[in-house]
Image 1 (cartoon, one colour):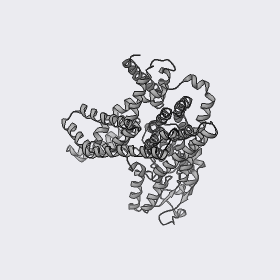
Image 2 (tube, rainbow, N blue to C red):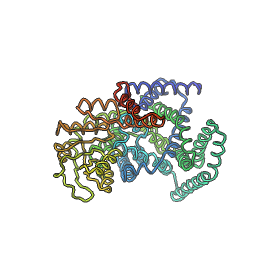
Image 3 (cartoon, helix red, strand yellow):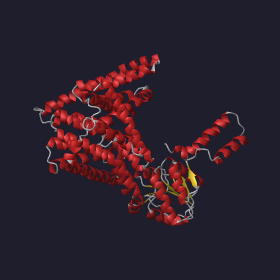
Image 4 (cartoon, helix red, strand yellow):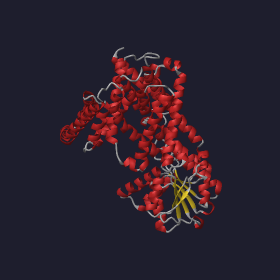
Length: 568
């Protein structure tokens, strides 16, 4: 088939698959996977140029790792404390061990294949999880922030895993020498990249930037990314390592924001084609012939990976609800598992059947992820009622809850909760902060705030706070599920309670109104009025006229309130 025609079909198929998935309210990535399986050489055969597909997939992975290097930040781990780094490392190591044992004992694979299986299933899909969390409005929730931090650590660990793939083949006669040579090659490439990053790269980017040509700037960034990937390939290392490293180096320059802005659309296109090409690798006939083995592999991945994530988060002090939600979102095989499987086949120790099972397992677990998140959402209330681990403390260790009368309860100690707590403390109004994130409770304690660690959506926690005598409940969660469940639990205890709720989306606001909540606060909505007020002030408008217009806008039924954030 003509390469140009094949490339056009890939893009058109991605568009159709993405549109269908969007209409079905599913992540568009799942549409790319399914449509790739349909048009691939093992189904309709509309695209049969395997070389072209593999090239597109390689470019997509290189651009993904390059932008990951540009965006990588230690602050993302600091937001969730120790669980982001140490919890992520424990999750990877524990999952590798589980995969190794499952491969040896259940599937009777060789030691290299079993170890490779463990490495593959230790990784989750950043693209799938990020999209699902964004669509559900849970990106800034407790489990959402933990998932993103663990996903970033997993993506970075791919670099190390790819460097170790050649040693699993067993063909290395002198292991210490081979390890020393590999370390030497890596060190030499890193040294060359650092030298180029300190002296050559700023000069080159400055010259290109001085021309003021967006096309030349984009071309320079693209050449750096693909050139670094090709360079590591020449060194006998992984292309993933090179593209990630040059992204890290470019991050240290003043050109990072422009580079990220220019490369992101191109990355998104090739990442889309990568998922389509991943779907094209699925062999329906192989799946039909080995469906029992595939089901067993999917079951092992799903059950044990959820249990590992659950155990890690419980070990770091998080509630069972948070641990289960994170496990339900992280159990799938990630996109880089496909790259590891390819590396195993290229090294000669992974069979074709093993490779096909990994491809099928990755697609099935990706397809199951939004379903699992929806299922856990539906049973959210039951999980909240069953949650435990209510620990009461404050900075002095002597918080007397029995004497808490006519105070304010702040559910959620994020940015909004912190500001509210500070304001109430300054005003001398009694309050208690409740949060199920131990890191945030520790932060509240360090600020000498009255607080307890617990799940505010749990009726027992609210009963413990004497909600019947509280002045008001402020629900400042960014998580819509936790918000709605907390409101329901609070109204069960005190139907007359004054509840002030943070709400982002129109659908969420409508649910809260049906429950009887009238005090809804949308940060985006309120921010828009602050902008208008400042603009009116700058334009010289008098205060009476400003207030009149703002009051009219607040009463205007056509003024976008919560509805405007539906796409956010």
